Image 1 (cartoon, rainbow, N blue to C red):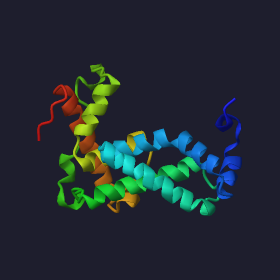
Image 2 (image 1 turned 180 degrees about the vertical axis):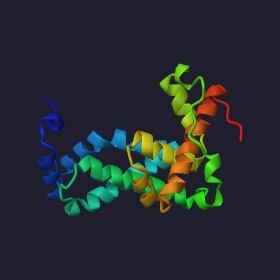
Image 3 (image 1 turned 120 degrees about the horizontal axis):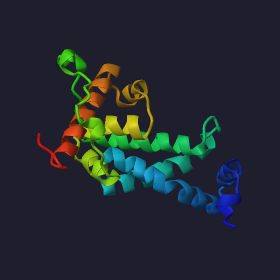
Image 4 (image 1 turned 45 degrees about the vertical axis):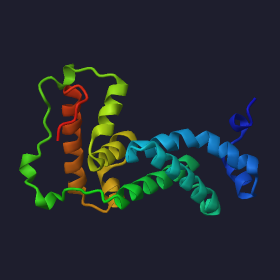
Length: 187
């Protein structure tokens, strides 16, 4: 039986805190794939996601002694990955449209007449998400795929809750447009 399967997560963390290299390897193998995909959904670039993954594990292992089991190790590591991914996007000057500069009434969360009737393959949706502008993609992924609440996203990104909400609504609308156009993105 695989050592990673039989080991209790707390025991594995303790082994790593004691400097056990095999423990580090087991943790990496257990979480690296999911954390890579989390980052990739946010940064939309494989090389950047790979770099972020490595940096996140380096930081997690460096600061493992500060991990206090208030949440799971996976949740703690995911927060590191999400923060590093968002910081990467911020360095690339990601721009959000401030809600105060927008006519709120023009942003209405609408259901289109055929939205429920359209069935899409997962790969088509993933491709469409990759085509979204970075701000839209980030908010959409954090909310839908990473299960962050709008308030948490606002705090992470340093923007208002209303701006997150407007970006989310616009992202859903734009995503639907891309899908309906057969994967073509028109600005």
